[in-house]
Length: 265
Image (cartoon, one colour):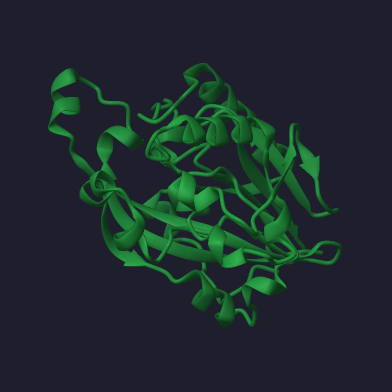
């Protein structure tokens, strides 16, 4: 069976309009703030070895991010991924399979830590995400499109492989593609023997508020209809596998989970 460790990546403020679709034009214009958290997941699997799902936010954001992003986001806590891996007895070269749920700054920011490693040469992403991210940043004159940064996802020593449909990568790790937030966000189901099953939905569903009922659409959503359909699907998956849902950016929900270097077994 697999075991997993939830790695906290940070705590920061973002424009509320990104997380919750503004109820009125006045609320949108106010550009209120909203605090979110982030995480990635280390899975140790009998078949696939060390699996890392997402990489968090780059630690050198102050030097590399566009000025507007520095103004839009306020960090209260930011984890160093390499330090977090060391707490688990690992270094980037020990990762056997690297999965990016999608390629936004807070999920793929540390890909450069895996340059020229076994996992870094074939990072797993969805085919729809590849079309969205790589085309958009390549066409942008400054390499920035939405929350995609060209210099964080395209570099020597990093390669990709894609999936276009739901995939069991081992007996206990199932990847499923969620449409809505972007065209193809990879969620992950992990089955453990002692602690049950976990559904990591990442930005497929930001929070319990978005999940509902009633469903509250996020501001960042390329396909609202698919987002709504995905919520119904997540409810069905949670019921089918008797799985606990870990939301992508929910500060209150996140308090219930034990974090690395502790394990769910």
